[in-house]
Length: 155
Length: 109
Image 1: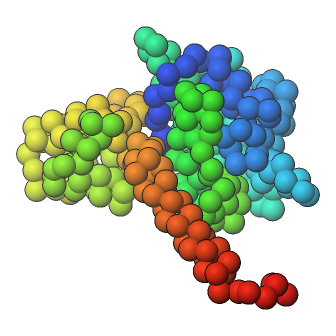
Image 2 (image 1 turned 135 degrees about the vertical axis):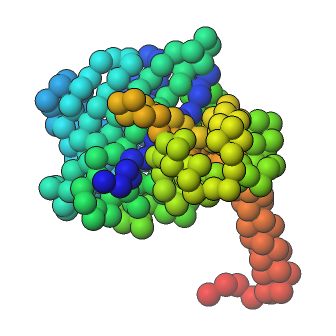
């Protein structure tokens, strides 16, 4: 079978706890993820959603928390709410290396013929470089310019 | 960022990245099959690409898979292209404002 996983790595001068907070706490995500937030109680088995916090608020991604080990590992299922059976999987691995954090995001297990990989491959590099910028300088990047978010209609 | 530019300044390494862009998640053997390079050369180039974080690796069982990691390229875009583009737009917007201020004695509708 063709391996269509996407693997992204970024090294950030920060702590694992801050990376975890930036991913899971809506007030941080809003500062680098283009007015978006990830909402859940982040317990194994709980639902989570990725929302755009504009008016009106729109849910762009839905899924379930598969694994949650703060602050090192978070595994989520990922689907467009308009096509909830087209489920893929996102794994965040957060590893401290000296004074850096290696953040690896793997988006994989795409369904056969799913358009999701094409949609998200536009967004992930932007989100991750904005996250790095936010954690290192306090300021995210303008990632809305030129396209949508992770679950939106790019591609 | 030096490592990224250095890694990109070689045709064979750019070819390896193109190969991964076509088919992401390949083993060393698969990569060697698609390219006219010795296994040693591919190993060396992959090492440099990995050190520059342009290639990420993941183990699946006993296989080491190589993935194109575009995040550092996006950082270059943000630093070297995006901000100049913004400046460009600012110049155009200032020009428009200046021309409208001098050429329009009457009030805007």
